[in-house]
Amino acid sequence: MTTLSMGTRTWVLLNSQRALNEIIAKRAKITHERPYFPVAGGLVSKDYRLFLQKTEQWREGRRLLHQLMTGEGSKFHSSLAEESSLGLLETYLDEPNAWYAHNYRFAISIMYRIVTNTSLRKTRGELEDLQRVTSTFLTSINSSFVDFYPQISFLPKCLQFWRTRWESMGNFHYRVFRHWWSELKGAQIPESSFVRKTMLGEYKGSDDQAMYITLFILTAGSDNPRMTLNGFIMACLAWPEPIRRMRLELDSLCGADAYRLPCMDDLASAPYSSAVVKEVLRWRPTVPLIPQRVLVEDLEFEGYKFPRGTEFLVNTIAVCANGFHKADSFKPERWLDDKEGKQDDSRSNSRIEQNLWQFAFNAGRRSCVGYKLAQKELFIAFSRLAYCFDFSPAGEFNDKELNAFVPGQPFPVRITARSPAHERLIRTEAVKCDIWGS
Image (cartoon, rainbow, N blue to C red; front, side, top):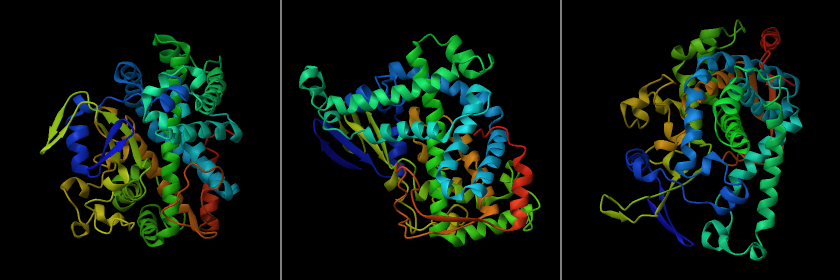
């Protein structure tokens, strides 16, 4: 653990799995609350974003999210991921230089179908706007001195010289959300869909509240997989040997001559491919520093005394490195082999749906509801891309710099179909994809 004084706030960075599990997971009753973020939560989010809301406001939105992702959303998720991945493969063939945009459409196509029961019909510009909303929101968290001295947010508005910048960002987010929300409320969305039945029917909050919850579901369920897919592509460039081993495993199941695509039924028979998913989540965690929780009462832990109001942040980079042999190396076998520094029996479990690096998706009461679905989604995307394509550098790159929030291509990649047979297989299968949109 590391203690920092940040303005009027005291931060404690949790740098290990044990500290995270003991403080955030086991003591969730007193460590689940959020502090107030005057900029990211107030000006940028208009106090509506579920991610930063205090528990009293957050609880109902969390219930709805849980209802969707563990109920109707989970029933067809695997088949939706398989279908959407067909569009992913075809667009990698047709427009390989825009691979980063295809990663986002792949993930959001799945979430859009889950929320609306319809296929995504959005332009790349519309998707770029929504992705920009998520990127600028995430980078606004703890970016202003006002969030470290929250008392000054009560100054008269005429004295808040920082306000114009952040309020302008919040208004842009609101306009983009309104654009999407107007379609989500449209007659073309089935009455049986989650958005019409639950958010526009059963939910008792305001229209703006319903909009922010629904768009949070769409963006959180798509941007994190997008960034993790980018991490996988980086692993293909920086560590080709593990990807070659992954491909050999997939060839043994699907045929080296492009007999068929990997599918979700292969999960139990593909332990190394499952380990690649785990290792990408560990090697390049999607969210390096998870926004803080605040103690609601005093805590004494192993001789340390933390007063009420102390804020705990999950230092995901440290958590994903501490206790791992050669942590900077991309070694999927560490999840399968006792010699690679396995710490407990759960790590030898090759079943992707259980014990798959939950800490990459946070912990405690605010942990990601859909992390098990996301892991399956990543398995199907990783395995099909590795089976069908060759990846090589198209210029200089730094495997520590994924540039997740940079517009355009985050790093240079050359993507080619593995063989004419694999290209034919993609073309044949892609006609079955109705979820992708254009």
